[in-house]
Length: 411
Image 1: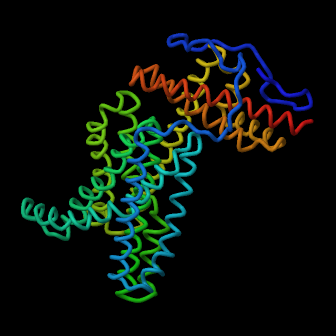
Image 2: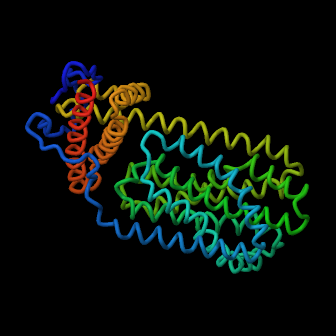
């Protein structure tokens, strides 16, 4: 390993590689054992064949969101739209902070996250407005039930969850290399749900303003939707992302459509339970909130916590494969695959002005671990093996740049 001068006390002291699973061994030819030309660190991996499609999808989602914003402005009036939009930013901020915590271990690409949010705030709202009335009329006729019950309890969950979930299915294909498992599905789906709730909150807040002005009505709907249950749509759509991500991880991308259909079932069921509970079962909001909403939210947070811990274990297990083959050392695996290790590594790099480089090193190693998991499960071997090699080369270059920066700063 190309070590800098002794003045830099590196956390990457060379140590004996440790044994991994041994079932899927990597070719033991670490790139850092030979001469490697040092490229600029920020030369990322070559764009995928879906690069142009991803840009088009973001542009389309942004344009539809703009149209929806115009529609809400005309429906509510500019003043009410701006006022309610500012209020809706508060529950949106709460949701985004929660999703950022979920996304910390292996952050998803910003472009994919923007697409998910814009789809939720624009496209899913537009689909709901277009499809909702017709489907509601069909359901009222078929079930011979009051529209006041069919609309919120059956039609809204069916149409809204389908409209939101489509974004997650699209991301499975358009962001194939970044969609690894349940946590990724929850992050993408959660952002769709957050975007949808943002636009829907503007509509609900605006209706309260039009009925009673800025007064008790608006305050009540803001507390109920914005403060007591900001994660409702996030949780519904996250159920679709969770199931779809689990199917992708264990069965591969060819099972995406069945996984999507299966994921809609808990999303729609949860939405029906949420909307129908207060309308058909409970006669008091706070009883409904304490007995149903709070336990559901607690179960969701607990589930996400367990999934994040599983992600860390998977990262450690798969990076051990690279330690076995000599690409990493035991010390590096500990630094890259544990929260404490990452904090230690970033703190060390910060002392030498290499914080950004270290974060890139950690990110590349984490992506490598998830690609390795796909290879172990024999998913699209040719594609993932090529991606593995690219990531190994990038990790090697990043390590070299990291050592050079630390060495230069220490001298």
